View (cartoon, rainbow, N blue to C red):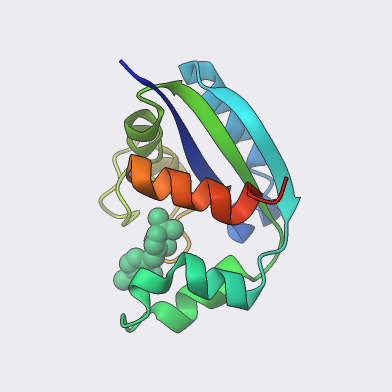
Amino acid sequence: MQVEQTFIIIKPEAVARGLVGEILSRFERKGLTIRRLAVRQIEPELAKVHYGHHADKPFFGELIEAITAGPVVMGVLEGPGAIAHVRNLIGATDPLKAAPGTIRGDFALQNPYNMVHASDSPETARAEIARFFGDE
Ligand code: CMP
């Protein structure tokens, strides 16, 4: 399996609830390597670029508000099949559909407060890593 890098954001609600260690440890226990990690406040302008593909959705405003509500922890995880493994570990986008045992299934009740964002393809991963870590 190809070694990949994927991008994650541990969202403001998860940081405020003290779940950063729990969430990172799930990725580490799976065998993924943390390549980059940063605590940041995402500005609304950057959030709108990141979620630009949802700009026409009725929940866009709520989504931008939630991701900019406080500091996030963002990172790059690496390993064989990392993109799919991370998506499996975090669970379905809608916390109601996320299986127990997944991060969203265990810690989230409803969108947009689904705890973690993760890239969904190699192209997205490359773009998101460049967007948030490109200047380092
Ligand atoms: P994320 O993986 O960060 O990518 C897009 C986000 O949009 C998603 O997680 C959810 O937080 C959010 N989202 C998706 N559907 C809804 C919805 N119906 N209402 C509010 N937020 C949503």
